Image 1 (cartoon, rainbow, N blue to C red):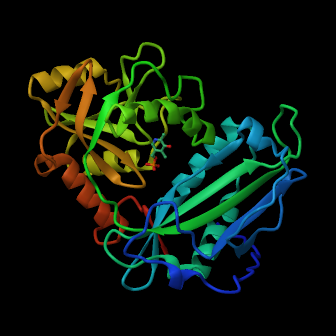
Image 2: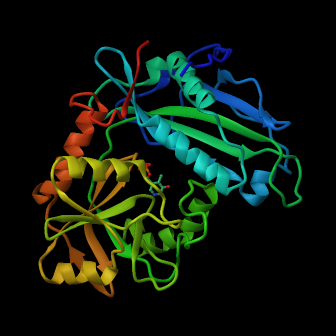
Image 3: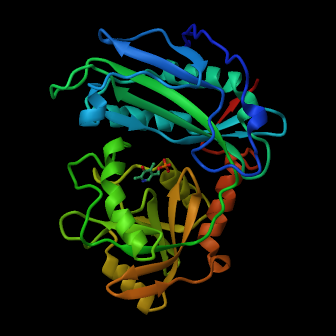
Amino acid sequence: MSVHMLNIPVTRAAQSRISEVDFDHLQFGKTFSDHMFVVDYKDGAWQEPQVVPYGTMELSPATSSLHYGQAIFEGMKAYREESGDILLFRPLANLRRLNASAERLCMPELPEELFMQGLEQLLRVDADWVPIGKGRSLYIRPLMFATDDFIGVRPSLTYKFLIITGPVGAYYDVPVKVAVETTYVRSAEGGAGFAKAAGNYAAALYPTRRMQQQGYDQLIWTDAKEHKYVEESGTMNVMFVIDNVLVTPSLSTSILHGITRDSVLQVARDLGFKVEERKVSVEEVAQAYKAGKLQEAFGTGTAAIISQIALIHYNGEDMELPPVQERTISNAIGAELDKIRTAQAPDPHNWVYRLTL
Ligand SMILES: *Cc1c(COP(=O)(O)O)cnc(C)c1O
């Protein structure tokens, strides 16, 4: 397949901000690299893409996404190898999901060449922002939102797609305490829970804060109909090890199709672990706990890869899980995935996308 090379002009920042950054004390989401990728959609087509200095944008108060929430995003990471090469992990999976989200919200599809060449151009310009060092990476946040200056309810005719990035430090991984949510829901089948839509996050804030006020870090979402089946943990997919089997809820329209989830399941199979994707009831988890068979529980997502769960609160009871050192299955999968992502292990599924500067 021949690749059509786009012309993506670069306007450089007058002065880099990189010398102001303390790479040893990075707080997630606060530090942004010097540049961003921007492209507008109008008249039924994507217009001229550009790389420009990271900075504020002017918006009309009637900007439709501010009113009706046509806004989606992605999250991915780039790693820096000692060689200087930049490594991306499954970027085309992020593009596929962005386009699945876009379709669900009546937004235009983003072509592969625009996404990949825009991303590459941005990473070349801001290569110095991709940190070298164990656990460090560049967080990449693509986003698309409706820009019509119109408050009638209909799909917008214009959109903006951007990619912003920022360096992040090693994720300080304290096992979390979670509580099973049986009042509120994140999403229902037939809704937009599978999409990375901004509104899903807005609606999750209140129930999450409520749980945090009760002393938990996160909640475990259950199904909208009966509150019987496990869906996700906070903003991560969730997995359990019960009697040496890795068990996770099967995908549906109400569950976000995590790329880490998919990768963890694949690596688990590659390592020879038994994997089951199916409905997982909270009752099953509680029964397994009582029988001493609940060995591990963790969330999966780009930010932490594997986020261990220390305790699950359900039905007035705290189920305390075994110490993290004893969690042989998730520890093995996490270590292997980390090696694949940083090109220190064979990559049998061609997940790593190498950018040589
Ligand atoms: C992004 C996200 C995930 C994790 O997806 P990854 O592709 O693994 O980062 C899980 N659940 C929700 C609700 C999310 O928004």
